[in-house]
Length: 125
Image (cartoon, rainbow, N blue to C red; front, top):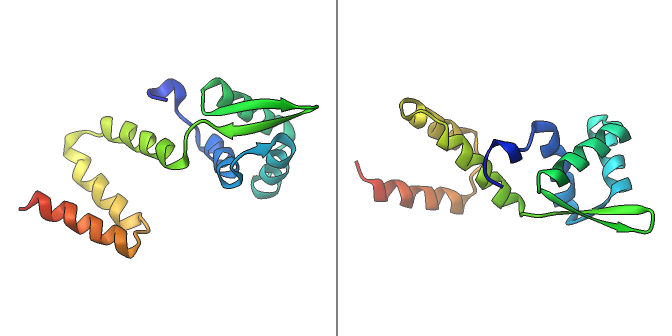
């Protein structure tokens, strides 16, 4: 899913998170959860799901008169691609500030902090 053509909008991320949390989801479940959490109408949710299928982020399968949506990629793979795209477009002069912000805003676990320390130690001074 490389390039802007397949980028996920902020609203589409909301639907992707719902589907990732369920593993795969019936359309009616996505409509219900999106409505409860985000105030999305069924029509808006249908349009966003169709867009995510067209972009290649979701697969769909018809079961009777309903549709089942399944992510094509894991959440981590999709987020990694979005981060790679951001870094690709980040000018060198602000790269340090961006990385520091990500570390400050991130919710690193103890093992994540240890891994980050190892990476930083490998860089040296």
